[in-house]
Length: 349
Image 1 (tube, rainbow, N blue to C red):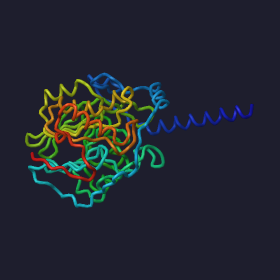
Image 2 (tube, rainbow, N blue to C red):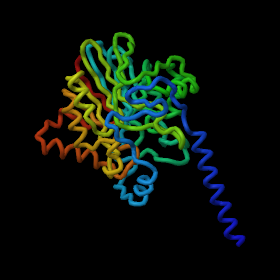
Image 3 (tube, rainbow, N blue to C red):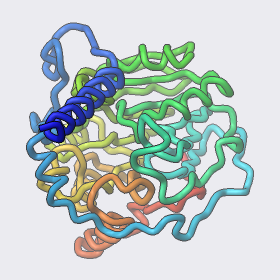
Image 4 (cartoon, helix red, strand yellow):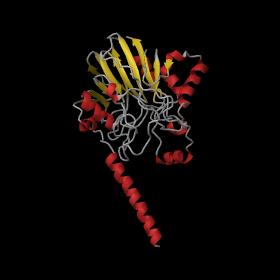
């Protein structure tokens, strides 16, 4: 009897701690007018498909069959100095890794979803850790003017990295609805939160958050209470599109019909297996190629692969699957680059 009581006590303490951590980690809730994708409490996907719930999550954890990862495989960290700026008629895209890019565009230095932390987690002692270091050292970054955050998941909104960016560069932030207060708490001075299709100007460039099929949460009690998005940047009639984490949907064809063609697009390809579970929130490599077509992209670059083991696809599965999809279609692989960390890719505006 004493053993049973002790066991029940341990279980009660465990779930109480989970509840408390889940409560305190939960982010703010956006409060604003209802829309076609906000019901007054929670945001919805354009596809109307939602991320899988707790019962499917338990099934996924029980049936997991993750592919292999090798830590620090062919590690490359850039030693060459990055330019402070690039010419106004040039675009330089430097892949850090995961969804972090340094985009030098429109006279600006822009970071997307920056993460330099070892783990994409609320804690640095637990959670998914890096299998490869950032391809660019934080201390080697040029002056950062603008940071774009697509949503509040820990592999995209990293508290430690953003604290460091704010302290060193005090950049401007553009974020989806509901994320502003989190950045203000970190010390950011200039934060603009926008809905899908709202435009803002940064110098001579315009930035517009775009729809994506994903979800948001940082704890147990904030599911979909802040928005998620991609970003369309336009400068001098040139269009650069950072696709946020997303499942596939008709919204990409609709976007392409209205805003295409797109000159340069950054598209996620990884963390997609098993597809029955990840499909509503992450596209497969074959679907990434379809997104390239849907949005009428002239040139695409892959992202969201090979850094953090977030799903069952192993370290090279997404890259190999994209190569296979391009080969089967007879698609020129130079039209959809799988970038190397630390390297820069140059384009003309």
